[in-house]
Image (cartoon, rainbow, N blue to C red):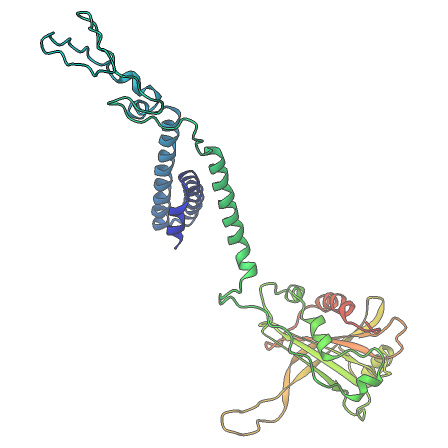
Length: 368
């Protein structure tokens, strides 16, 4: 189909288009072939270069023919009459065989040796033995205009090829980061009764950032799974909202939650001290009180093959948590940002600080 459309184009549009396309492809393929040491690609580049050279030669010959017409083409033009020899002189017939002229016109005898003149031609009648002269007033096509049209057409095709991947859907198998699940249908009563409470959907949108892997120190990774829930804090009789969201990478898993209770960070530190916890460190995030702590995650085994419910709950890998107060006055309620890995390691505390400083300001609601 494309070849048929190209054959319909005029010469001064088609040939410059072939030259530009052949030059760009030839130079590009030759560069890639030299860079990758690919002889097959180099041969393909030579084919494009030769094809372009043939097209350039054809255009050059056409331009020379237009500037200096050939002798054959010149003989067909206005000077054709000059190449026709003059008519031969007619001999005077003898007096005995002279033709009797018509009565209406008297014949005048010609002197001996006088040439016989040809009858006059009417306007528009061509001389015998000459070719018709072409109309000199016919306007020839503008060569430079057609060349400019070819370049414009090539630019339009290039722009269309550049914009096609952004407009048309892509069918490639390139892995892409997953998005957050769809919105939840109905929220518990505690979310309607808590002013400024966010949902699990909102936490997931804030946590699933394009630069989250880079903040974690693994910029080449993509999120493989996301989850969210608008839960209720345990042992609160359904009165404390505790939304959660989680984003999983190949190396780390990041979990964020918001607890809308009256427990402040200062009180939380005292609870850690009473419980004999020693692996904690006070901090400050965005001018708010915060604290680092470490704890093991829970590991649950589910057997889907035998139909059994699964094994007992075990101890999972160690996780690092940064708890940040809702406000600077630490009047109650906090965010938890937790990072862990299946290998048991977690990044440095500065990484959690960077994640908190990026994620927390994007969480909607008055607490954020």
